[in-house]
Image 1 (spheres, rainbow, N blue to C red):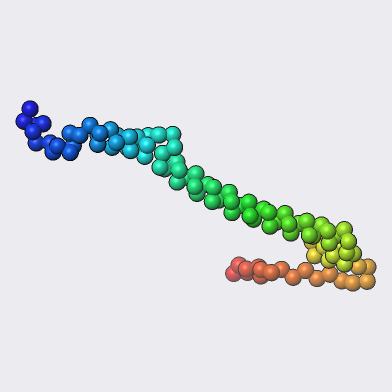
Image 2 (spheres, rainbow, N blue to C red):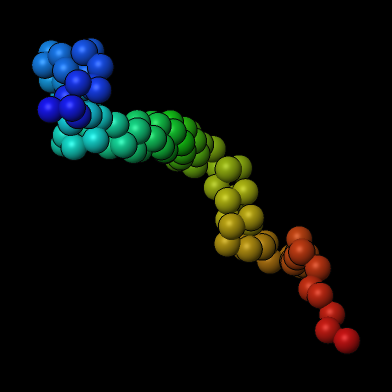
Length: 104
């Protein structure tokens, strides 16, 4: 009984103990604990940024598709740049962006 006399009275309060146990349970042991909430928030942020990226890419592809349907110059530009096509009376020279490193 000497041990119980040394404990402060505010630690003997059953309501304080119940609230502290509830807080510990909610912060660490619950299905939606603090760490899970942080992980979900970062995942949500990543998904929102990827959504904006893909929405922008989708809009860009739609405008490019509309240009290809309506403008013959854009079809020629796509064929020349992406598929390396050329007209009959011209020569095509490919220049690489990155110079090849020479091994000595």
